[in-house]
Every structure is written in structure tokens, then in C-alpha cells.
Length: 67
Image 1 (tube, rainbow, N blue to C red):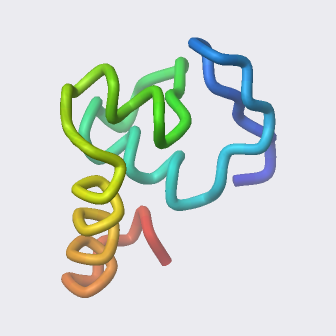
Image 2 (cartoon, helix red, strand yellow):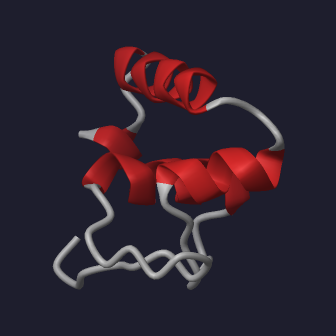
């Protein structure tokens, strides 16, 4: 990701590559608004731990969004 992404809910300006990848994986690759991990968890009504587990699952499966 060459362009820095920020959370459109809380304004966090330092989203990680994994946070951006998770947003694209769960919300669609063509999105232009991103959530930080905590705001995404709140939006989906799940824990951040569950999201971190999903990131690891996607990495383990070879998803290109998490390389």
C-alpha cells in the first residue's frame, strides 16, 4: 500500500497492511473507507481477537491481501 490509509470512524492515520487487507477481504476490494481493527470489530460486533485470528487464517491460506 503506497498511500497511507486512515480509519474513517476514529481517524487513526496509521492503519497496518493487515488492517487494510482485512477491510478489503471482509468489506470488498473496491472500498475507499477503512476501519482500524477496533472500529471494524465494533462495526461487525465481534472481538478484536476474532479479527486477529481471521487475519492469521487468511495469511495461512495464502491470501494475497496479507502478503
